[in-house]
Length: 219
Image (tube, rainbow, N blue to C red; front, top):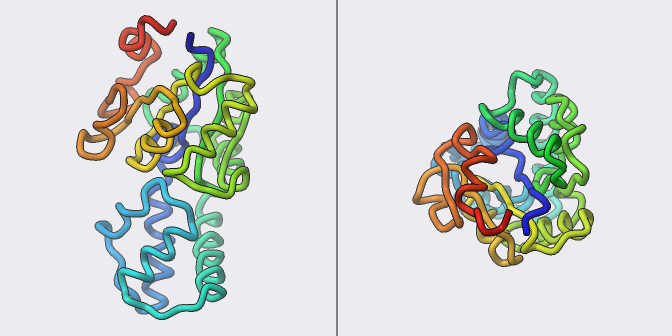
């Protein structure tokens, strides 16, 4: 029986992808590295340090681990500064309504995000009240596609993985949830999240009614 929901943040609750892209682009430009939206797509759902490694490898750059950590921190500072412009108007369509309904119906809700800035983002959205547990990049050592962040959320909710549905917009996120034994809702195109248990193009379509209809034997 489904008792809880675990949500990724970027691309599910809100979309800070453009802010991330602009921060990585500025960092890459300053370093004289090539970086475009095609490379940026490879960073979806990936941790900050894994992302800087992807960009470094794309440029065949020889950079020490210490320098990469310094660059990742610099990128994060650029990104965090840009978060101040976020507000409750930045929910993805349908997300706030879904979170409100889950609260009303008594489901347990956790965040399962690779972001280490999720607390700041939730605060800007005024969304903290919707979550019983916040699992983020500070909560576990292994990032997606390892299932650790979702297992962390389920444990903190005092639920088993098969009692939870995970909402994700990244291939690595769906892989992580499935590896952990969770039911999955994919948000986005077939080629990215088509391997989820059920897929919707947008959060607006991924209503509680629609999800209950698909997993009708679990409610």
